[in-house]
Image 1 (cartoon, helix red, strand yellow):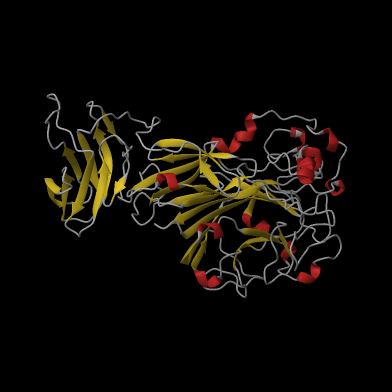
Image 2 (cartoon, rainbow, N blue to C red):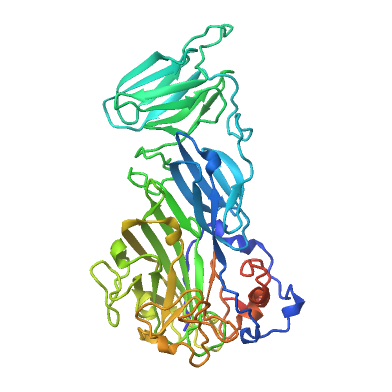
Length: 540
């Protein structure tokens, strides 16, 4: 049975829609393959379409907090962070295997970052001097710097500089500050400045009455400081030595350093940093055949499920909360399949609570007080036990969103509401441990019959005696792919960063996506699902 879900997606999700569909294969070596079962897939091919990459941000190290945003080259937002960067720090995120670069924006300055799946390097390192690609020009010692106070009420700010003898020279004092106060610091003197306004020294120091800590602000136009956060003080504007002003339009209601326009929680000062998978308001897809351990028609539309995730980070960049959104888009089978996901690197004890917008009926699954499935070593969440419970038909039929109405087959048409699952962690999780989940289908309401993507294994409640029966040739319990045939053909695939347009009923995926066979055999092209080389008449 098949089903469809209608969502409003960001324009960036439809990157592939701008490309022309073609009906002929781009690789003649595989044009004769008409069935997925005929592909000779190398044993070491893991079927992944994504990779976890890292970007070394050591060049952004400083004694202030940076506002960092990462986007893919389609413009999809992957990450917002406000953090002090130290030498050796890296950012980790998930990308499609076909992507080689991302855009990194640091306090308004944008760089192209190359990634290779293991480590990335910032291409345009700033080796001192005011960056040429800064949003505002700056020359000479600054005449003025404007700060926004983000600390507790009642503090006193002292602004000072060091004279030639390196001793402290007191300059300005601002008493009894309250949160949100705007502080304008003008130059110390005009000596030798040809009648122009007084200028600040090359380095200006800030300290408060809360202790001996102080912060060093470069006011010589040697660095771009707009947006930098020094302790409780954020630079929101400056005037350079040529009397040119540079200011920020950032509105930060809760004072956590994130502009409201970028803050997913603009009224919660404890939540600012956020990371998206596969991108902000962007969905990736999982597609399954559900007859495991027997094979089917390889149209990969027995279950098509979209997912997008937002990870909430603490000040250390660790994950304290995950919000997953799932949508069932198609179900081209008669089985009453359930669906859930495991968190491979997280134990139940590391989770404090799970909430879902869809209440689990609990017919054949056992859910504990936290919202996790019981008797599991890994943390496991069950979304639903029967897909029929989460869809609404506009036209009844045996299939759901896989058969064209009027084709003579009983076509079911409708939609499924978004199911939102929020996971709260009792122990902050390292980002690399939660960048991917293990989604699985529960076959036909049999709790012990699970169907996973090939690089994952079964949960504790799966019946492993199904392995290596009928057409299954899983490596379990050894290393290698699971839920694959002897030819290394899987029962589940994923596509990232573009919602999968699944084949219509009974159309083998190799006859629809002409690069699928080449990708499975050679690993190229990695963007087979979005490069336009497909038969558009065979997709739903």
